[in-house]
Length: 114
Image 1 (tube, helix red, strand yellow):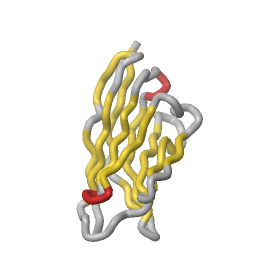
Image 2: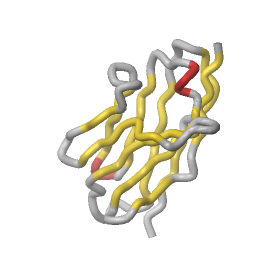
Image 3: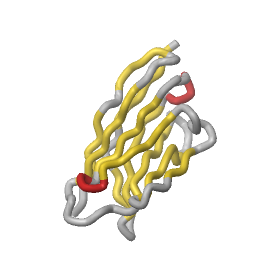
Image 4: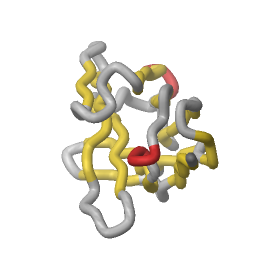
């Protein structure tokens, strides 16, 4: 069973930066699609960014230009560099992998303060 372990959340002031990491528990095969979702209190979980093994990426409009997703295929690890953070970026960030079924990490809290 593949597990995802996130790290890198925390508290940051508006305008600051954070970097999230997510490592899958296997490197026996390359996971084609890995990405980040987030869920703010009282809101639905939403896609933030996706990374595909061949290099494609996609982003939510709200983060495009501020966030960058990258990956290490050999380690099935993805990263999310978050710059120019805004108050509305506050949420629990979840790592996601698509393996024919969905695999989710436990989530990491990102809090942006004024």
